[in-house]
Image 1: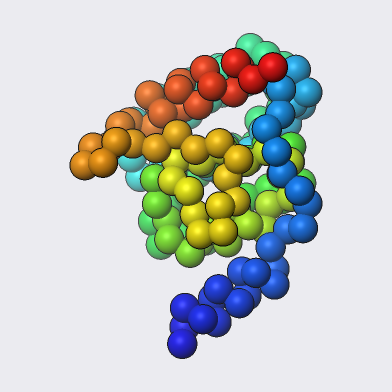
Image 2: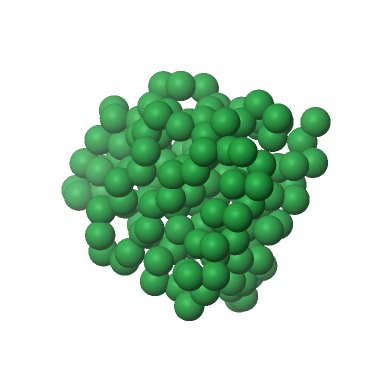
Length: 142
């Protein structure tokens, strides 16, 4: 019963803004959901900040902790999640976001992400490596 209620609420509250892939030259603001509980959280934070600062893109960094509410910036062009799984809290934040381009590590129900860079089955890569791969793919979009 709880899942039915959550799924209904997610569908009702989700953003109606259409999403699609975007060229890097068209991006001026990015919200990054960082897995603050990961071992490489500090290193990932520095890489993310340096990457976007070097390209003149405004960054909103959200540190995600297990069991805590995810307060993502809704009015952003790009939502990038480095969180491998945060259950319904992550799904809620992603679906509520009005971002025009959504990037994640794991596709969620309803497929809200436009680009997914997932770990191979049975392995888990550090978020720094996943971020580098995501940015390689995003920069190659023409």
